[in-house]
Length: 170
Image 1 (spheres, rainbow, N blue to C red):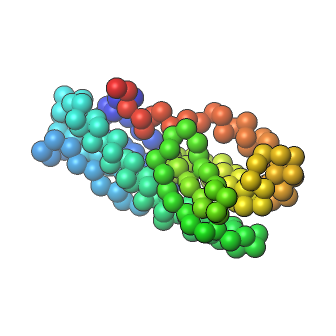
Image 2: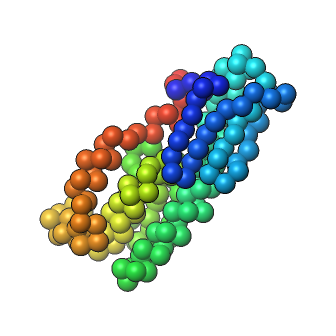
């Protein structure tokens, strides 16, 4: 993906827009869930170095939002289910939304912040269920269905989303 003045990201907890201003090359600020990237000219914005900087900046902001919003939500959901999480980390994995280790460590992808809240909850509950069943056996799905009755529908909906718009083309 290439970022242009028209590029927009609209998610429940993460919104991006570009605004032309008198800045050196590019600048970004985070105002709640809104990220504003300022650029001087479209040519400066198209510079490969600026494009990489924007991606890195967006990843940092996404990581921050996951830590602020999703990690506390995960810990609250774990407590509600009587589950103990050893550690929660935020990864930059874009091949999977989350993972759980046999030691009770949960990783959430920073890209998870780009999903609608119900899908975020699905991923969180999916990973928490791995604290009970470390596989995708029928018992796993039965456990997940107890807390997330429409988990199979959510699984299908997850396939509609990808992280490619924060992964620049080489």
